[in-house]
Length: 224
Image (cartoon, rainbow, N blue to C red):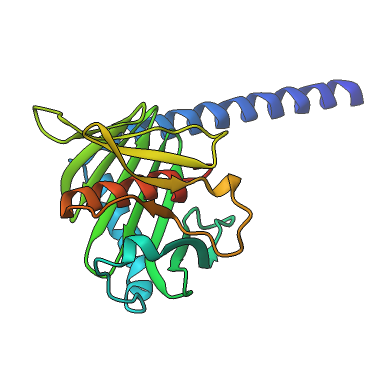
C-alpha cells in the first residue's frame, strides 16, 4: 500500500514538472515573438529600462569631442540581477573616474535588450540570435552581424567593420578601408585603469555614434 502511494506521488510530481516546463517554454517563446519594436511588450520593456536609467543620467558628466579617447572600461554602481529582478545596470567612467555612460540590460530567452546613455544620446541594442539591432536616440541606426555594422534602411550600406577576435587584446574598427580605432578587449587587459578605445584619427559624428554602438556591443553585453 505504502509503495503504491509513493509511486503515485512520484508520477504526479513528474507530470507536474513536465507541465510547468512546457508552460514556461511556451511563455518564453511567446514573449520572444512579441518582443519586436512595433509591439506593446517592447515599448513596456523600454520604459522599464529607461526608468532605471533616469537616476544615473543626472550624474553623468557632459559628453564632448574628447570623451571617446577618455572613456575607460572601469565600471561603478554595478548591480547584478537577483531572484526578483532580472535587470542589470552599471556606469562606465572616464580614465579620471568620472561617470560618463550609464547602462541597463535585461536578458530574456534568446533576446538581450540594452539601453545605454551618455549626457546627450541614447543607444538601444536588441541582441537576438547572431545579430544586434541598434537604435540611436530612438531612431533605427543599424545592425551588427558577423562583424559588419550595416546601416538601417533598404540600402544596408556598410558603415563599419569590427574585427572581433576574443584571443586578441584589441579589436580593430574599420571605416571605409582603413582602421580608425581599436576597442580594447576587456578580457585581455590587466591595466587597473584601461581605456575603452584607442583612436587613430578624429571621428565624424556618424562615426562616433557607430564607434560607441560597437563599444556597447562588445563591452556591456554579458560575455561581451
